[in-house]
Image 1 (cartoon, rainbow, N blue to C red):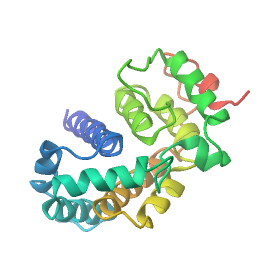
Image 2: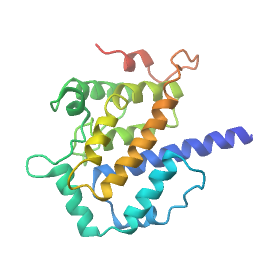
Image 3: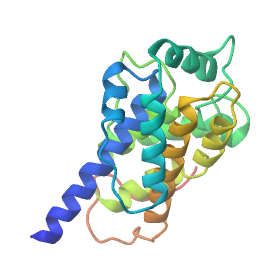
Image 4: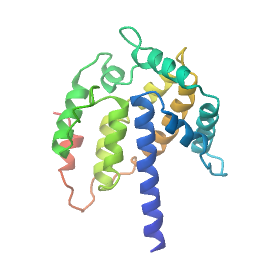
Length: 212
């Protein structure tokens, strides 16, 4: 029973962190998000995640709403293009709307996940992918592994490195630190081979992991 509770707590925590990252990269942080980040109860044990939480807590405490909106605009939108590109296709191929985007669209269709009409960005946006992973944290580990290793693992470090070095980045330096720390943990988690799991998946994992 205690082990089950621990697993449920870990699953809930992972879901929430994915949703926090999704919200931070989809739009400038709201006042509610800043309030949440400022009031975080950070664990005492030193780790990369602890350092990242402390950094984003400090950044949130020092932030100004208008400055946050201007920073987000400069970083991710800009005139024509922002300083930072939050799309997997660009980091993996150097161009937008390439095969990685077609792959994620194909796999989302297999998963039965439809994009909301309110969402404008392509599905390979880091916010969209974090939201997908948040949805999948209740699914089989092998399925989560397949999606993460194919669609996030190959490029998230390129994204966080670009963001951490961006001229306009202030609050988002801490956001990039949190993103890198958490997704690195997930990468280690999914480095274990679970593809041979005997549990029946809702979709055939091979369909997700194999390129055409």
